[in-house]
Image (tube, rainbow, N blue to C red; front, side, top):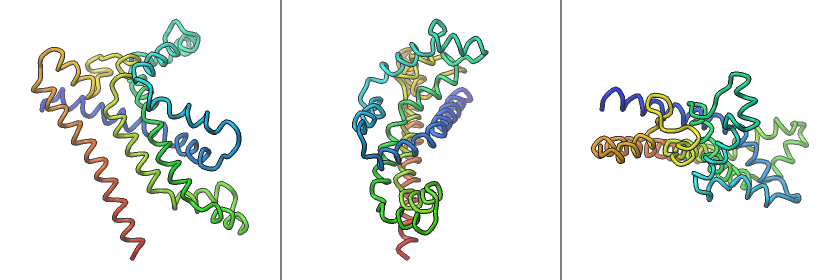
Length: 225
């Protein structure tokens, strides 16, 4: 694997990591809200946050392009302030973050729903604030689901293609990720390089998922001991 391929791998991992970091706090907050909220509109909110899972990625990319394009109000406003997003690395981060967000939310929400609310109530009666109860009771009990959702989101970001190619383009050296490079190589007949990059993508995703399973199993054995 040459320097160009290594650069593509490094860029993809960096973009996926930034996207995951970007959605971590709002994703956990949304998951906790969905797990605890019982009022009207919960189903609609849950459905809205899950839409990127079922929509074609190109639809998501087109929506982002329409929202942030220079000839659109928000895009023009950002451009006037020197902030360019479309067809830059920022668009890669944004597209991958939007596509990965539902995976984090759904996994973390399931984990929060399994935490007994009575434990939170007990912490509150002992003087803990809502924030303190969350960090000292809820999050330690739900950390496995949050971690799993984070890794799933990172793995999804690694392989994102459809939304990214519309809003960020496939610009070598600027916005080209592993998925985009594989697509380009197949288009021009460089199947050997496409195969090598595909193998790297599978390896990265496997390593991320396996590491999570290892951490969870090790922590579970430690808790049992």
